[in-house]
Amino acid sequence: MVCCAIITGILAAIFWVFRSIIPGKSSPLEWQLTDTRESNDRTIPPPHAKPTRFTPRARLASFGYAFSGLNRVVRTEHNAWLHLAAALVVVGAGIALKVSLNDWTWLVIAIGWVWTAEILNTAVEQVCDAVSPEFNPMIGAAKDIAAGAVLVSAIGAMLIGALRFAPYLAAKTDLMDIPLSWCGG
Image 1 (spheres, helix red, strand yellow):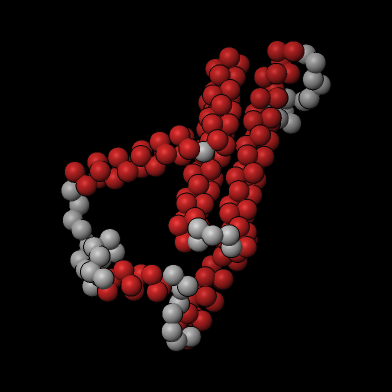
Image 2 (tube, one colour):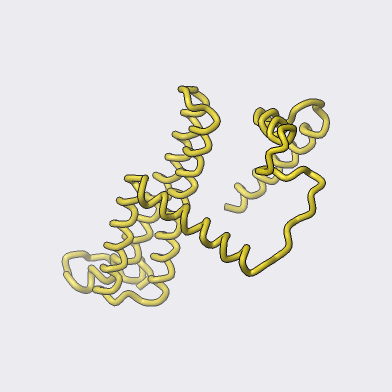
């Protein structure tokens, strides 16, 4: 995990250096941002604009936007329905097996991890579809990679669930001969 953070930091620094050296546009989407600003469209503030002030009403509105986004994911993404069903099964099993607070912590992290990946995958798909509605192999690759991130997180969550529930299931059924210390119990 630390290695990934270090490598990401190094790559970001290299990108930043080359971005400042190479003249011209730094992003393939920069033309869209420039065109939007030149058309006096207010969706993107000019670079010299002052940041907006903090207001309770604006913060409440931001929560409304966030809940609207969650609502959209749950309504439109079939995989989100599967994640919701899996989360409900995990919560039900946790309640039925009376898991410890430590185990609940891991289960909540796993559920949140999968939901975060699914929501970010949906956001990537939406942006990709807006940028390139027609087929583009690079856009397809980006969407596949984002979907792969959801798959990796779901597999990790299943492993966490298996490790957390194993001692409780072993104690209930006596069918499994797993040492409880191996599973954290």
